[in-house]
Image 1 (cartoon, chains in turn brown, orange):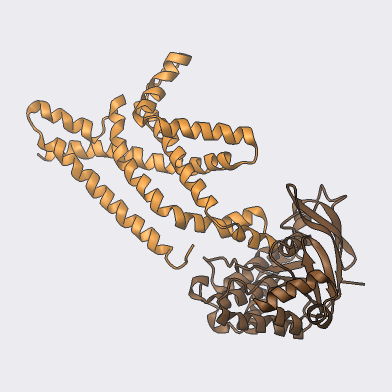
Image 2 (cartoon, each protein chain N blue to C red; image 1 turned 135 degrees about the vertical axis):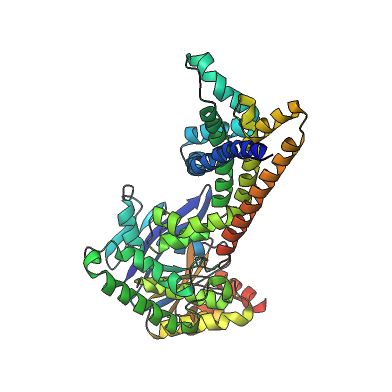
Length: 261
Length: 212
């Protein structure tokens, strides 16, 4: 069974149909790169998966559980919505770290808040928090930022901020980690450190969906590549096929423009 | 001389009372008005915005008269307590101003902050109180500081409905040919606003550790 199954997803903003009938699936441990020009619907697709937008049509299943179905999802409670969205983590293009919290606090805040809802929280408060903090330190270490744990976001470079954001997204242990153009807001010399972190996640078989403009990176890291254009999936397959030997005319044109630019 | 100073100080006590009580009540009331002016429920939103427009668009002096006389003229329940009338007018007036400052502050927080909280499973109250609020406070502190200092000076307006505030009591001495007491009232305002400026600076520095 696939960890993620997206079926016939559709989304319009007013009269603009941004997603038209998007279907794909993802296996556990797989990393999928989504490529395409701006306005192709890539970001909207990620936002739909993370419940930041509500699709008009289609369904999303995670581990066989339907977490979204446009035909029956009207009355989902806020609590249930929060539970469902935790299947996904999202790393934003613009990091969106919380400026008043240190790198470490950014990583552990959501876990601490969620822990309060646990029935054994009162009884085991100390142990639960210790565990969360230990996990936070381990995650900062895994993105190479142990030394910056007590720094505030404005004291960090863009690349460091994005690495903190990745650790923050990992803290809740999502089934699927999504990246929305994680290096697009970075100076070129800072993209490498972020891409390396994502690379190491892929090496540890983290299930990921990466919306990216970094074609070389997609080729190296992704197990599969999905090319989107004007709200539809134009081509899907191994990077060697989609990027190096595209079958579709639209994919070919996009890649030509990309590599000639 | 000492007698005069004692009288002036007790007059300024009225000014400080209006100042403190107005702040105490207008700060939370302003937040409620903000929620009204930002709600998705249109009738409430428009009503709140019209209310804010009226309060900000008319003189506080006129509002003082309205609060003092309207209950008696319209409902046969004359407002006898002038301090009470002053506080009602001041609290409503300042809450309206504060609400617009709050709204500007809340609307200036990038959407990404809310979205980052949401994808991390936070509830809407958690996002507001844990993430947005402190950033809003940091952003609005300078404008709030301006309003607070204006409020100190506005308290002198209460004399138009007969509150014995400092300028009113000082003016009485001019009938005895003494102009000094009246002019000296400026010092009381200056001194108090000086202290407030220091306090506001301290508050701003307390939030210097982050950028928002």
